Image 1 (spheres, rainbow, N blue to C red):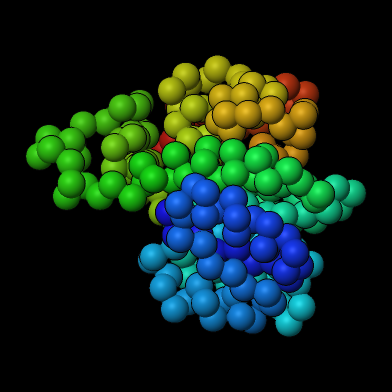
Image 2: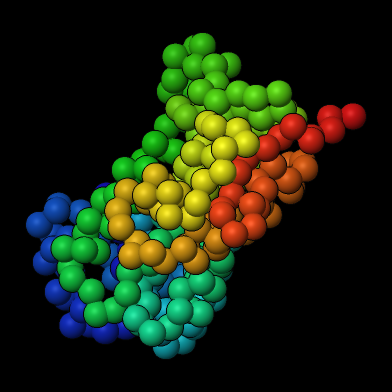
Length: 242
């Protein structure tokens, strides 16, 4: 794994460097926002993971996240944020981060989060050309107006592809679409999509749903519905293909 850690605290970076070395990861470090964006842009398609501290000199973490997301819609980003900055956590997720870890954090916890996110993100790097000839035309989830291929990590609404889905957005869409019109609570979605306990932090789901809806709307009508007081459901029964 080629990983970029953006962290202005050199003690934290040096500590994590030892853990990354133990995992045999190719870790690189940036210590301010401008340096981070420059380093990322030098090899946009080569990074497998980014960890991003929000409090950075030069350019703040929110802007760095936005710049990275513009350059690469799908590279996994894990934010590192202060425990009491709830608004920063939500805004960071809305800006394109896939996950967050609160400071102070255990190195083992961060490593586990990186591995969990990387497992899912790694699937999205498998291109259709690498699949068997019949894989591109086979869909794991298919309804009247929606279809999804897990191998190619592609989703289509009314035959128009939903573009630039991050690993978490794709998995969230798949989870909902596998059971059309079934209502999922935020807690259920946290357990099904994120692989680990989020300690009831349901804002994570809301932030990802918001970004997912924005991408769906570029392809067609909204198919992720809010069930007030309960959660969310997938429903494409009202899609008009005319």
